[in-house]
Amino acid sequence: MRVAVTFALATTVSATSEGSTANPIRRVVSMLQAMQKKVEQEGEEAEELFAKFECYCNKNDEKLVKSIADGEQKISDLKTAQESDAAEKKQIDEELKQHKEERAAANDAVEQATSMRKKENGAFESESADLTANLKAMKAAVAAIEKGVSGAFLQSNEGAVFRHVVQAASDEYKSDLEAFLQSSQTGAGSDEIVGILKTMVDEMTARLDEITHNEGEAVENFNSLISAKNAEIAAAQEAIESKTARSGELAVKIATDANDLKATQKAVTADEGYLEELKKGCKQGSADYEETRKDRAEELVAIADTIKLLNSDDALELFKKSLPSPSLLQVQAAARSVRDQALDALRSAHGVNVGLIMTALHGKKQGFEEVLKMIDEMAKALKQEQEDDIKKKEYCGEEINKVQDHIKQVDFQIGDLSAQIEAQEEAIETYTADIKTLKESIKDLDKAVAEATEQRKAEHEAYVAEAADNNAALELLGFAKNRLNK
Image 1 (cartoon, rainbow, N blue to C red):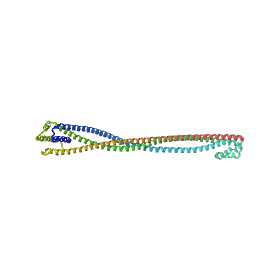
Image 2 (cartoon, rainbow, N blue to C red):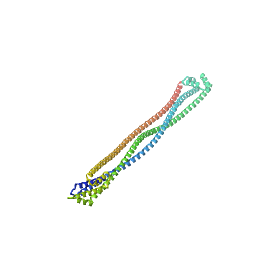
Image 3 (cartoon, one colour):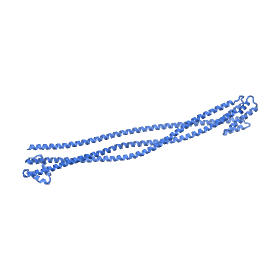
Image 4 (spheres, rainbow, N blue to C red):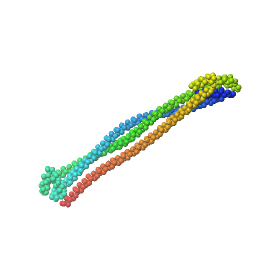
C-alpha cells in the first residue's frame, strides 16, 4: 500500500512542481493503472505459487504420515514375528536335541543287540557243530556195535570223537560206556550199550533241535528289533533333517528381520524429523504468504483510491485551471489543492514515514523538497523489503530443494534395502540348496547302511548254509571211510 501512495504522491508532486502547461493527469492515471495490473499479476503469480506450495505441503504431509504409520505397523509386526520365531526356534532346538538323543540311543541299542547276536550265534554255531559231530560219532558207534566191528570203529576218527563224548557223558551212562571202551567186546552187554547210545542220540538230537529252534527265534527277534530300531533311527533322522532346515530358516529370518527392524526404525525416525521440519516450514510459509497477501490487498486499495482521486471532477478542474499562463495565485491554489488531496490519500495509510510526510504537507511555508526526500527514503525502505522478499523466496526454494534431496535419499535407502533383501534371499537359496545336498547325502548313507545290513544277512545265511553243507560232507566222508574200513 505504501508503494502506491508513494508513487501517487510523487507523480502528483512532480506534476505540480514542474508547472507544465499540459494536463499530466492522464499520464499519471495510466501509470497507476499499469502499476495496479502489475500488482494484481504479481498477486496471481504468488497465489499460484502458494497453491503449489500448499499442495506440496499437503501431499508430503500425507505421504510422510502414511509412511510413519506403515513403518510403525511394520516395526510392530517385525517385533511380533521376532518373538514368535525366537520361541519357535528355541522349541525346535530342544526337539532337535531330543531327536538326536533318541537316534543315539537307537544306534546304541542296535550295536548292543548286534554284538549280543554275534555272541549268541557264535555259541549256537559251536554247540551245533559239537552236537552234529557227536551225533555223527554216536550213530556210527551204534552201527559199528550192531555189526560187531566196534574195535575197528574205536580206532577211527569217529571213534576218537566217541571217546570224547564218553568222557563228557553224564554219570548215569559214563561208567557203562567206559567199561565198554575198556572191554571192546560184543556180547550180552552190547544191547545195553546200544540202548544207552540210542538214548544219548535222542537226547543230543532233541538238544540240537532245541538250540536250532532257539537260534531261529533269536534271529527273528533280532531282525524285528533291528527293523524297529532302524525305523526309529529313520524317523529321528527325518525329524532332525526337517527341523535342522527349519531352524536354519528361522535363524536367517530372525537375522533378516533384525536388520529390517533396525532400518525401519531409522527410517521412521528420519521421517518424523522431516515431518516436523515440513510442518514448521509450511506453517511459516503460510504465515508469510498471508502477510504478503494482506499488504498487497492494502496496496491495491490505495492505488484504486488514488486513481479514483485523480479521475475526480475536482482534480480535472484543478489541472485545467493550472494550464497556460497561470497566475501566481492560481499556482499557489493548485499546489494547495494537490496538497490537500495528497493528505486525503495519505490518511488511509499508516506508518512513521507517512505521518512525517503528512506533517510536512501541513506546513505553510515548506515546499515539497522534504516530502520528496521522505518519499525517496520510503522507496529505499520498500526496495529493502523487496530484497528481503526475494531472499525469503530463495529460502523457500532452498527448503524445497532440501525436501527433494531428502526424497532422493529415501529412494536411495529403499534401493539399498531392496538390494539387501535380494542378498538375503540369495543366501536363503544357498542354505536351502546346501540343506538339500545334506539330505541327499544322508539318504545315500542310510541306503548304504541298509545295503550293508542286507549284505551281512546274506553272508550270514551263506555261512550257515555252507556250514550245513560242510557237516553233510563230513558225514558223507565218514560214511565212506567206514565203508572202506569194512
